[in-house]
Image (cartoon, rainbow, N blue to C red; front, side, top):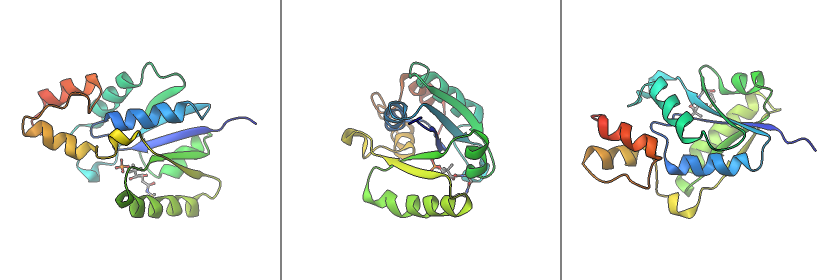
Length: 160
Ligand code: PNS
């Protein structure tokens, strides 16, 4: 059976090693993985869209079958336009579930041909999130091992 194309959407503000773990796992299952960075400014991201794109493209450049793109508008429209049929989301802890469940079912209602697939990162990343990484960085903590090398540089340069 031909493996479908999957889209892994998110804010990636900034990308963490947990995100990279999910991208790597997805790349081993699907024929192509498009990591789609949202251009949705109402989340008030700390990093602009171009920087988030650059950080991800650099971090994922050696993972075969992975492309990074920017998207705006409805996710299901973007996924359909890419001839993809799967949305990947990472599930870390039980508290992720409610929001993810709501999004998955709304996306299914909007396009029933698109399936959401949840992947769990390595257990060492279950506590990791973009916001906690930003907090650690803002307060002068070491973010080594929490984010890709390319992201460490941006975190150090930025006043968060
Ligand atoms: O990393 P995030 O911030 O949890 O990712 C959220 C994202 C980008 C996947 C979600 O906000 C999204 O899909 N935005 C696109 C708008 C959309 O399609 N909304 C309706 C489906 S819930």
